[in-house]
Image (cartoon, rainbow, N blue to C red; front, side):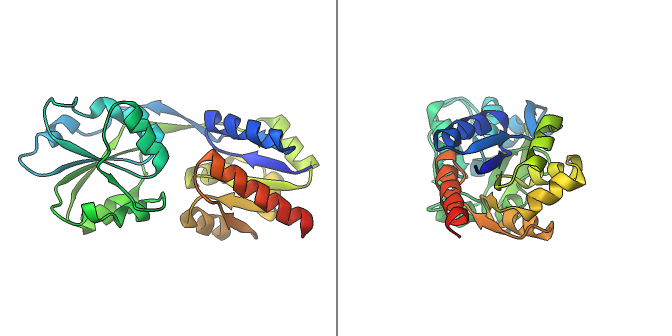
Length: 251
């Protein structure tokens, strides 16, 4: 049997695990962090009142929407703030709250894809990126290069989680492993927390990632086979895992 190490946050991992098990694959759910809210570290309201400059709120994930939405002016009250998103899942989260998204990448779901949106190239103003600490530096630098005054509103933070010892033994005892990685933060914590023998087994097994940046980081850590998934959502991840599993079976 193929065993799939799923390292997404708990809710998304459990959803993917159920889908995998429906296809006869065994999922090992091992999130390396959860989330909690925090003070953004800046006066967001003051930025929305910053003269007549164009205002842009940038959301990089459904998690950013969850924690950042309270810092937006209510519709029809105060500043006219445009919303930009990375990825369709983030857009859906905003629209579910009754907000309208003005800027999204024409294709793709990464910071680099969003930076190609033509709406960002003209009339730059003030951009607030809702994120976690140390996150979205590529996006911030890219917006600054386009002329935007960029501030990060760090409205949530990651809380590391220790792996379960029983799961570590399971990974050592079973072959046919595929690991799934959707963030560099999870990779850094895995390298820090996992025993050397478990980490070595993961690096020696096929891995699936959602961006070229994660693929590059994983290869730098010593991974031998890293494939890019079709997309960041569980539907795309499932298809990619099944394809990779089929390749391993027939290869």
